[in-house]
Length: 359
Ligand code: ADP
Image (cartoon, rainbow, N blue to C red):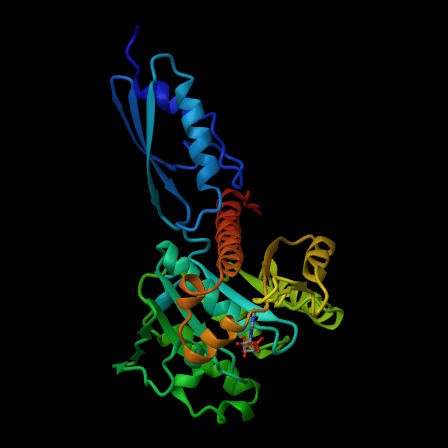
């Protein structure tokens, strides 16, 4: 039997498409290594995010394709991940690959909770993640991360983010007393957000998650004017009033050229820990319907759960992944992966989009 060549393997990998990016693994530059050892083929596949929702499917497709080569007995895949920058940044943000804003139509829907869960989930998958709390009207990230009262170090004209829970964090609540920011007017808000973007030494980050204030206002405008954003995520609860506000928020971000990466339904349902009864306290499915109507991705749902509230209050986000009920952990995991997938898609769209040349 003729021996298997590297080229045979690469040619087979040209037939495997990334199911979300709709291009083959070779064209996407995801094949990093091919080794042939008799009937054993080893390939290194580099995913575009460590939280890739489709690793299992890609793995099965790769194995199937390579096994079509006569003589292949075994396929081993070595996984790696390299998050790709969606849009180039400059200055202190120069090494930040993706900036994702988490917004909501109204307050109290769990936007900050979800921002912390997304940041922690991406970090747990292996990414380097920063969390910027720009909710001037209610900076709750320091409490949710357990760093209330901490003060960031100032070095020269740079502000060093606080490192906690494996994240690099900056919050308006770390710079001023909690009630001070509440009375700020537009120009002050604009100034402080610009300062966060220009002076915080973020370093290399795969993802910078930005917790926006609720509603539509100065902060998203400043962000959109100051830096290239990968996109926004809108959090809402299922009831009509919240969903209607979320629709408005999605439209406003899009008007600011911040594409919508998706909608998340928080407090989507409640499972009684004693009897398992499922209650849809605030209705159910409103976010999915809104996403379909707006033509934007639906990233999934997170249940209402007393432990999530508790972990938020005590500043231990990690526990949402280790100590919560399985169905809660799984729901959060699905949302994190769905977001990571959408960010990769967005980045690839930008890279392959034709540019219009006007002479
Ligand atoms: P927002 O940022 O939209 O104002 P928060 O994230 O501050 O909302 O959440 C408001 C309150 O609801 C907090 O006490 C938080 O712990 C709680 N909360 C948010 N999401 C959930 C959830 N899925 N289950 C239980 N409590 C939640």
